[in-house]
Image (cartoon, rainbow, N blue to C red; front, side):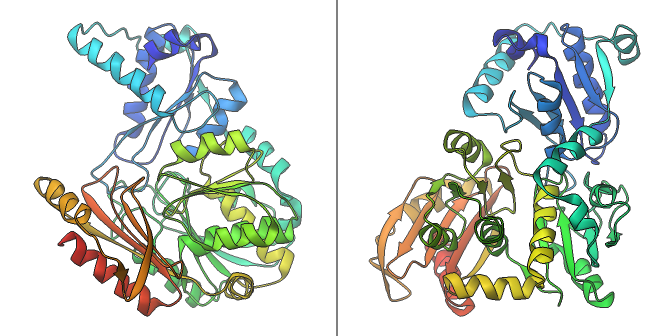
Length: 443
């Protein structure tokens, strides 16, 4: 990464390095900082575990050449990762990753690693401790009226899933009428009882807490707080597709803003219907914000998002931000005076009911090719007695039916998982489509 910054003329701008709450993340971050400093590049090293979207904004605030984030995001506790951000704070595009990979290959052949110990680098002003929160708070306050949110009488349960988002919403909304109760907010790299992905199966405790404390809403952020999960006032999980459509509805209907919507192919057809109703274009991409972010920038998009619960917004870094998404959702509730379930009812009145589910199946790596061949060989003209309108192979195998229901079979890009997704007009049909997908893949 140090070589990349030099090759691209960005070395003089320095780099932000941050980390999450996983085991030894701060030590990996310190080691990275020592190498960047050893190459003469100024490092702004986060002073504490910090959410990825906050680190992304730190790139903008410092006008840095990029960022390194030590995090495995939503993955299990045994994982960690080295995440790269570009000079605009976005997920590294494929060409940046390709250049770093070339540098890795060269270094393995000639291992001469320059490094400066942390203390010495600090004395030489090559490494500077950086607490990003004040810069981030000022930016957030330009995007949303925090003062009006703080006046609302709400009880909110926040589940940071033992991750880097711990304390952030409470800190942003300090001094407000809103009562914020936090759960799973201590550091525990084992993520006991859960994996830090804010999906229904990992949010039972949040659901029970919302019901027990008669809260207005439950908000969960994943391990590095770039994704969000929402529990309604009755303890019911809102799917990521419902949340994405609700946030789009908020911008289009409540804030009266207009602009393109960028969505991955795994997200909801409700966005296409909202696009038609409000006369805004909707663009589809492969899965991953590295595909969504460039299109957001090109189209000056209103928002972009993916099925994982990660959403990005115009005027901010072109990256997922679970904290800002949570604030926008609270504002939606406050501006309309509606509960989360009532907001969903309002959305369905606009676009009709849509139901969705995803199943993840672990598989031995040696079965990957067999699964690909099985799915590729499918020539079904009908699925669940509905004609197949077309097959999209841009990222996996997505069967779009004539009634706009869809079934997608694809591999995870980060884990040995086969993922099967479906959206239709009832949960019964969704479950039937998922079972058909399993049979197609032979799992």
